[in-house]
Amino acid sequence: MGQGIDRKLAISRLKGFTQRPGWTHMPAVENNRVFGLYHGASRTILDASMVQFMAKSMYPSLFKDVNPEQNYLDFYKKYLPVTPMGTFTVNITE
Image 1 (cartoon, rainbow, N blue to C red):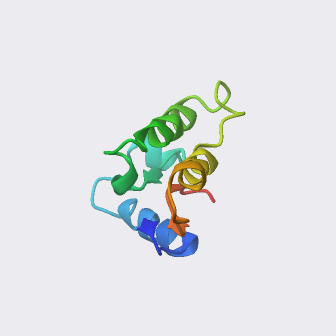
Image 2 (image 1 turned 90 degrees about the vertical axis):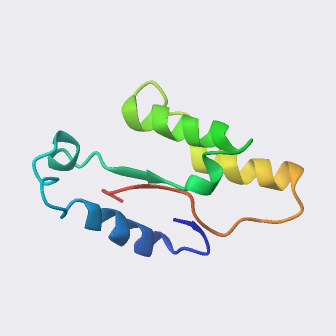
């Protein structure tokens, strides 16, 4: 996950966690509710977007109109001179 990481690769890596010993019987794995977020964005001023992603992952109907990854990209567009390229939030079912 993060800068320069292709979405398909991020999903593949995330799915790898579900094969760990003992994980197959976890409710999140059984219900395909496994999510990943870019750690580099979850400990800075950009963490607001990652908190949105966690909220939407836990309560999708309450946050259906929120697009955390787009909000992350919009922050860069508005305040920073670079455009991030990569995968910053992902759901195992994508």
